[in-house]
Image 1 (cartoon, rainbow, N blue to C red):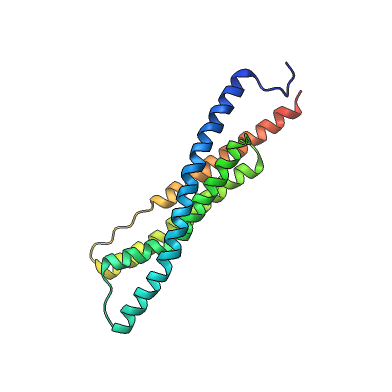
Image 2: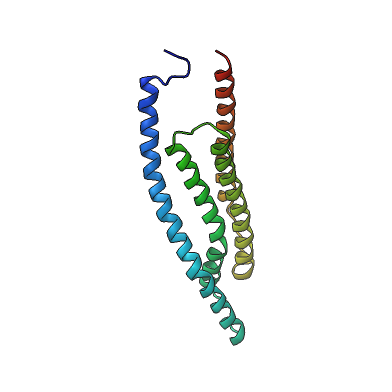
Length: 169
């Protein structure tokens, strides 16, 4: 067998990866559409609500603050989903270990870290405004982003090993 040929076992595995990636892409595409609709509807509603509260001189409720925070974080969530959609598109095409695939994974990790920071800031404001005696903040978004970024690093190392192996014949 030639060094560049794919073994039958590897071909079966690649077909499984492609099938799973097609399913993941469909789910992620539906999620992207729903997120885009939510942002298109959510942003104007939040602006109108905020203007109404300001003009009336009314105070904010914790539920309203939470809803506004969710809408403010939605573009970051959209970018994470978009990069995962792009990642699974590359998997579907059989491009597992190349620079662009790794880049999508690393970018998703970076967006997730930014989302985690935004969530910590918003949680801090919410806790300070509504419960200043009991401030509890979660950094799960940052941890998730670091994990995704770490997986991207592992993929980059695998890509470099694959390139070295292809050069060694």
